[in-house]
Amino acid sequence: MTANQLAPDWLDASVDSNALVRGIWAESVLRTESGQINIAGVTVSELASKFGTPLFVVDELHARNRAFEVRESFDNALSAVGGTAQVYYAGKAFLCTEVVRWVAEAGLNVDVASGGELAVALAAGLDPARIGLHGNNKSQPEIERAVGVGVGTIVIDSLVEIGRVADAARRAGKTQRVRLRVNSGVHAHTHSFLATAHEDQKFGVTIADAPALVAEIRSHASLEFVGLHCHIGSQIFGTDGFAESAARLLALHAELLKGGPVPELNLGGGFGIAYTPADEPTPIAEIAQEIASVVSAECVRLGIEIPVICVEPGRAVIGTSTFTLYEVGTTKDVTVDVVDENGVSTGQTAVRKYVSVDGGMSDNARPALYGADYSVRIANRVSDAEPALVRIAGKHCESGDILVYADYLPGDVHPGDLLAIPATGAYCWSLASNYNYLTRPPVVAVKDGVARVIVRGETEEDLLARDMGVIRKAQ
Ligand code: PLP
Image 1: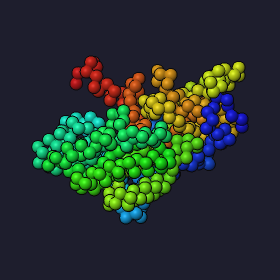
Image 2: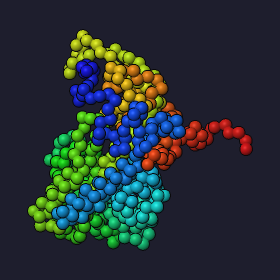
Image 3: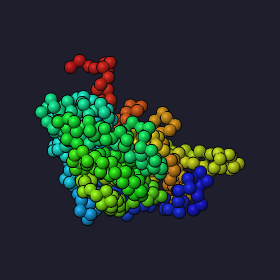
């Protein structure tokens, strides 16, 4: 098939438009003989008729196995160089009590970034000592609750927070373990490593300022400094950024050891996954090995012991476990001028098929927010119709409400078809909104042929529940 002139360069027109390309879909996903997508023994038609659409569908075993694999990769890599690892699941990617239990059973701790996320982790029954609290502007009640319940660590993000956490711990009669978030100057998503340690961003403190802040932390009897923290960005392929950041942080870590113990170093998350066949993420075991070998070499060079290495992956644990199921409402062929790389018309036209579904930016904001690319498949059938270049749009009153910018689907895609968009486990449900008063979709976990709701969908009643002007019938 020849490529549509409107298609981006990375989109391979030779890929079968019915194919489920491995690496983008959860492990158990396959096509049945009738052409249906089946996840862990349940077909999409069964899921749609039982739970409706849009629907988040999680392969439970995939998520659990992936959590285990990530933890084991870091455990093995660090123990091979004589160190130890601790893996925190970054709950911001997708948090509900069920997922907290899955990752906890796989041996991970949980990182939360607000009082709400902390409440979910606690509601799941997680030992508070296994929770880390983040945030550049934690409120006083959030700090007090975290200290009060006994969270394992609080990541301090600024000078003012030192006093707040210290006071809260003193009043509670506790010693709170804390980390200090530092900007390493490495921004892997821009592929540029800044030479300067003085950075223009809201998170953390500069490498230059860190020693004075650590001294301040150490001056409080109610605080125990456990180490530095950094996070270099998200959806990162390759290992150079992590290696560079680890080296920079270890140099500072070695300095700080002169003033007291520094048992841990937290290198954050950000390990990338595949959203389209063009994405080639680095296997997690390889990342873990590279980090371990850089940490080990740097520690030898600096003459220090290897600290406990903590990491905080979110997307790499949950992202690929899930697809979102939608129903097609309308399709429309739009003839578009083809322009060259400078935006100048070539005088030619090509057709893009717009396919609108029953969800949109309210259940997946990433394409609108970051221009993120996804892929898509017709989920309830296969077709040998000539592939068409499609753009999957949502139903919101916003022209930027796009779910998939470009993929090929069989050209006979039509209203009533079910579409599945893979790799929506991370930063989709957690970023969901009620824009245009759409209800947030349910999340269903599927395992061994059984699908169960782990987060129920919102109802119109939920939407109206907080509106104080609603005319309610007398009881
Ligand atoms: N840790 C911190 C401090 C973060 O800000 C983030 C994401 O923004 C993560 C961990 C998780 O990142 P990812 O889901 O890309 O692994």
